[in-house]
Image (cartoon, rainbow, N blue to C red; front, side):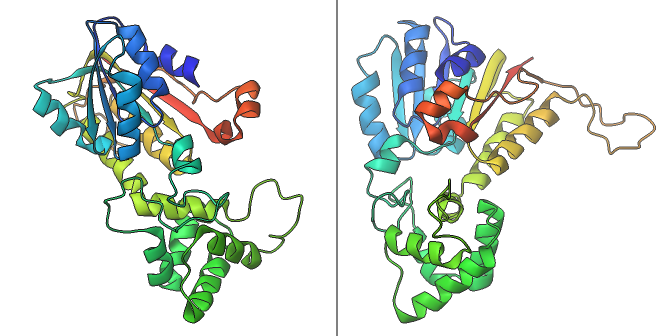
Length: 308
């Protein structure tokens, strides 16, 4: 959704913009071209491969760039280190990059048989293998149900516990086959989505604390009435999961509200003033051409808001 992102973020010459999830640096490069030689792009990603790629793509580009291997929740600290109080725009793409899926070797996909890792930051402590082989059936059920919205969460969790009693589950191929066997109809050839898709997504979200971190970030944006953004600054977020999108949606709605009093109060006593203007009444979605070219984009939702 390159065109939609650029339209919503509206990067302008000389501005300071943040790409908090560099990935393949495609969006970052497009922003760089818009802001020109007097602008500054701050690029953040917790994956060292993304930082290495961004150096190749961005450091000889048309605008200044500062790169940080970290999670986007570190943005307030990073801005403080740079002596920048607020920026003109922030962009987050909460999905996986093509590199992570196809070439990282960290088990984000069941398309290749790889170690069951799923860490975006390879230095993080917990891997998907540890969760699958350590957590109780009840906790695995919760993970698959809450993070993956998997209907057969309990059945899959029980099968995992039964299997690991005999031997550890070490690879994506082992887990994908196990899930396929556990889910009714999992071996049907006409199944549009692989039966293990939701389980893999749930594990990735749990390993990388993705919902926790987007919640933390949105709270940081809300602190001091959006002080991290300059007046007129824009926040654009691409979400690929309904739970992520729900967090973003409700946070932006709260920032744009002119009253935080409980429903039914006879009059407002909170004194809240809205400090964000929502630009996307409904989330923007990819068009049919984009989803045909990239089926992974079919669940994408873009939301944007502007600091008042």
